[in-house]
Image 1: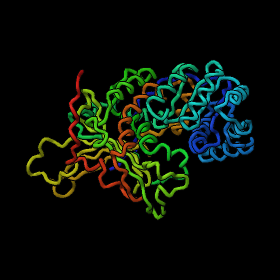
Image 2: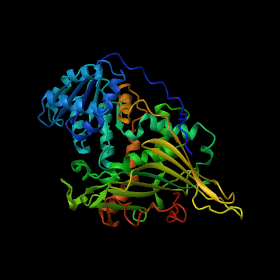
Image 3: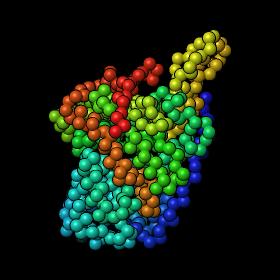
Image 4: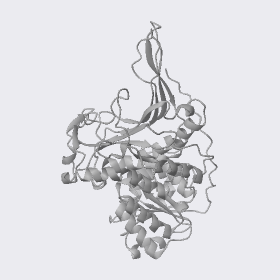
Length: 490
């Protein structure tokens, strides 16, 4: 049973009018994979919308490119999203590239001298390089009003994240720091908030009285795809769970904000993440990790992860990570939240699934009740599914599960376009606040330590499978996690 009617979302808060003074976007790490694969396509769609009149684009990186090589990259990236109109063509024609070491003061001073008007600096750099670049900028200063955009992960642990936050605070105010998580694109955020807070159907039952467990899953069929330079030093836990999936968890569990202003929304997200911890405070029982071996996906052979170019097998990098968390609030205490992200899986699965508790009793005479009711929230494509047990066709005493499906209203821009627009408009609503970045590291730190110590084995799973046999994401019915340890109130 399917309907195509979009689900209503609450009206977004009024965005500041886009300034008519031409802005400059300076991309540090412009020759890297992130810039070509995510940043530039999002920028292309934003420029095509007419939101950035007169934008100047400057790329910089260690690669010895010339202007034509850079313009070719921008053109190719824009073309992947159909951004090839006159606005985009003019932007590309006037764009240029500056080879530079973005951690050296003299090179950065030269780059800043090429910028004019309101400035946005995008750090498309690995965490440690971004920190060194920010430190160099702090020594020379940036123009007033400069906004900084940083890609996840923010630091490499809680200490480095706090150090980076302290450093950035010497450069610009917190409201001018945009820590990017494209899972927080406007349409995704508003879809979740609209579902939870703009109706009387779901919100009253989204609590521990009615919910058995919540799964937040991001499985993909892709393998490493040439990203060893970044991924082999991060792994699935840092790349996906520590950043993206914890943000989704926060949106699903936060209390209602009085408005969608940045201060209110980001405050609620921080509040619920402070209450989030490992189930039972046990990183061994509450986590799993795996790494894909050779296999086949949709007729395509994948080598073992350790045989991928650029991988160091000695690092023991995981390509699948699972955690079970508890959100220790009045609303959610006792509900297990199971988070997983895996590469080279049998199928694509990008969703949050809220599994409801079974009725206390099904009347004698009704048969066929086998699966609990579920609410499914998809993140690619964005859609809502509701699995319900009802009397099916034929014998009216038999229960069948039916799936009701509806599409969320699509956003005007891809997620990267949305977070870029927030930075150009000076609106931090869709960016991660500094204390939230630190809380995410605090949540996963015990797991990282346990894995480093070898307390949790690295399980192999064939590419194209559903993951290791001892997955924590087993069936909701009959699955009971270890009882959380009692917390000392002192």
